[in-house]
Length: 371
Image (cartoon, rainbow, N blue to C red; front, top):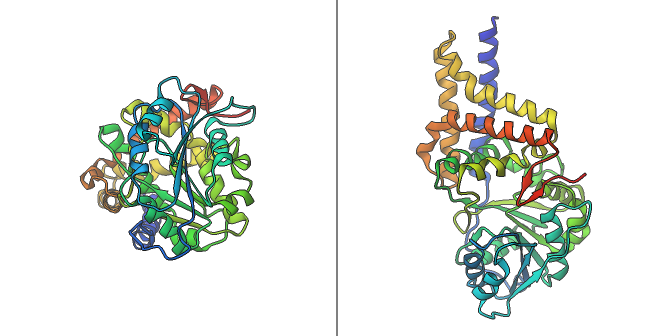
């Protein structure tokens, strides 16, 4: 069997597996929806928001949270050394609503990453039996907090992580951000994540982590992940490692987020944690090669003696990208630009490698690694 034939067989196996996982996940992924709460299912919820230089978004976030119809909740914003008017804008938006508290963050101690330290302080201030850690740019549409609490009750989750519906406008966002759904729905068997006790089958999204307070304390809170830039995934592994219940859900338009607005923000935002997300430099390099193999090599087959196979594999990639886009409310037609997305991810990988060699990425004025 020649080299091209071996390559075709390998790609057929890989794409067969990805397509199967995708189809199962499209059926299996829970989605937030309106659920009536029963008696005893309305514990106090503490919504905890670490905020550093978030003046552009914090007002709308506070307004949308305070408009929630859940019967018992508080919102706590920690101003993490902002150089803009984040704290003042949050207080003004609340208009003295007692459900909002704005606290000033303490100086960052050694051995901690900034966000993790901010969340540790938020947890210490929170009074709720459910702790929801969410980013300042996450939007909570009407009924979202009720839907989240209802899903926690119905699934008996100790940690419920929600994947917000991503809002994308610029081309950099449209071509890269939806790849999160491509990876989660295409590579991660969600039924196994939901049912298996193995920490290896764990994933989470730090944009929305909802803990039962007892579970959060049992795994050590943010102290346990204080130096991790992928604290969300570490939390998922810790929850499973303690025999607790990890559940995942799609935001389904109830919870949304626009992560970035320009290409440089997209590049740096993904580059800051991509190496850690893969588990180190060697797995990262293998991951880059894997994506070149499945997304770019098929285009080479078009002119290298296997045009039919190449076209089939290209169609497989576009199909998975399209299916995951539709499932997560992204633009379906952007799927045809998947090869460009792969090239942009290569640029992001190069940025991550440069930062790694120079001591770590910078994010919001801080080096996003701990030594």
